[in-house]
Image (cartoon, rainbow, N blue to C red; front, side, top):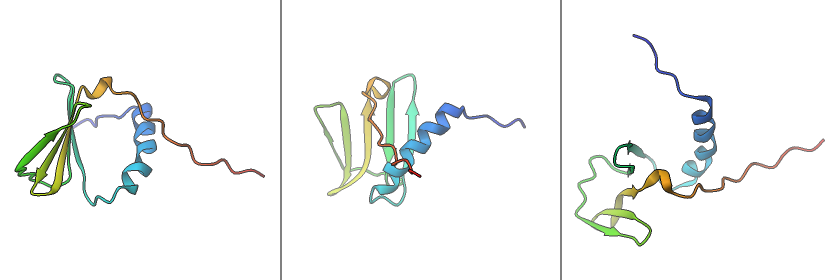
Length: 93
């Protein structure tokens, strides 16, 4: 079976996201992207078993189980303004 490759650009983007994801107080995170619907699903618990949800003004749906956020749904994900990711300081000699 042939391996699928990941583009260098995609790997670079993931590398830039890594410190932001690592800084969140979240132990596990699952993400699924529906290209046809342009929706990003982010889960913090599996299964989510959400009991309530809240739609924010920015097109983000928060999914709750009781008072705990168990997932986030981001509509129009590809049309979102990219977040500037801070670069680490460069070493000077």
